[in-house]
Amino acid sequence: MAGKRRRIYATLLADPTRTWTVRELAATVDTPSEDTIRPSEGTVRDTFNVLLADGHLRQVPHRRSLTAMLTDRGRQALANLLSSAT
Image (cartoon, rainbow, N blue to C red):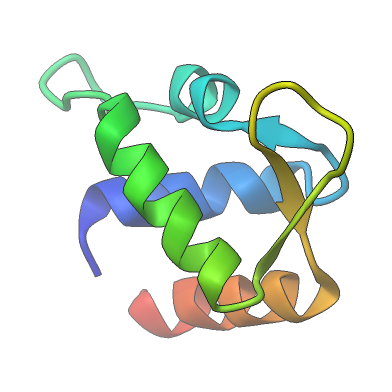
């Protein structure tokens, strides 16, 4: 699994009940060192859309920007992915 995707997943799992926009998620993803580049909004958006399509995120209605949060299935799937990647 790519490092950027792993950091996006870890950020989502760090606060699993939070609602996220792409911009908020991109701004929050941790970078482990100065040498590592933060994932772009485009990378985060692509990951966000895949997670939505797979049912790991659900859209929060009545928001101006696309806003989503982890589903229970998404929490489990991402936790399993991260644990198997180490």
